[in-house]
Length: 406
Image (cartoon, rainbow, N blue to C red; front, side):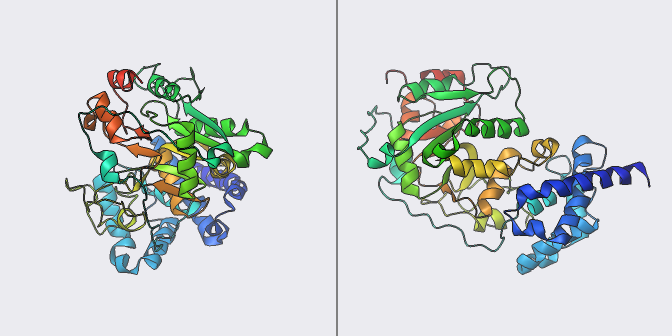
């Protein structure tokens, strides 16, 4: 047995023992799927660390199983979804841009979702989205929040993970300052650790949830925010009421970009050149099956309808259930997960488990590009009474002055 085959065998034995963490997914019990994972995971690791070619694995039995499952679910794409030669050609064209196909196939086997499912409907009540996103030059005070029994029924905790970006050790200042303006205490997790990769980020999340006593998790609501690019513009009561109103166990921020499923090979079909995205935001992802058909419609054309993992709120026990899925996965796989942690959370959302929903109505969150809000008045009027997420590391001047005088 050659060394590479020996390494794959050793990995396969250890990986079978790790499959128990994914028992919530019925496909994980499929012997054919298990064998495909055993074959593809070592190839994924090699492609990530550079010991194997990026496109290695496309002609393996395991990858053919993956393509067959795609073709079975999407017969209208059968001619391209299951074409190994076409996948090989497309992979070599895009090999410097996106995730190794062996990793994408492994991730789908580990966290599968129905490619034929109907998207969740989106019905928004109260203030219209048009009113929430209108940018004006007038300074208006935030509306007072009505009292609610919902906010009195739950404990509330907010936390952020201090991701060190560009050497900026004060990247959390914006979220802390705006939280304080609304009387919200924010726990900073991982401060001083340095650069935090996805495996450590998810581990820190889980460890923080575990600090809540088991008997209290059901009635504790947790708000998570990326420290570098989130601003808080509402109080505890507004956040809790937004979650309760949604009916979700975990409510994620929604954004206007379908990342990472707008790119090859995450889009999983080859019927469209996924390297070209039209500038017109309305309908720009309609030809991409996952992006165009598996997410709730936005209440206004071009509005946010895709998951953004930079901010979410939910019941502690439900959040822990999601994070438990990562427990037995190798750290190298989580660090190289297709689409990083956003790809992971999006796949879990698409699986239909854990009561996850997207805040397409902007009741709690909103995502906007920094260039869309060049003044503090514009920041306020883009999202009145919610938690804005900029999608990129915010300029320190915007963070420092966003809510001056509140």
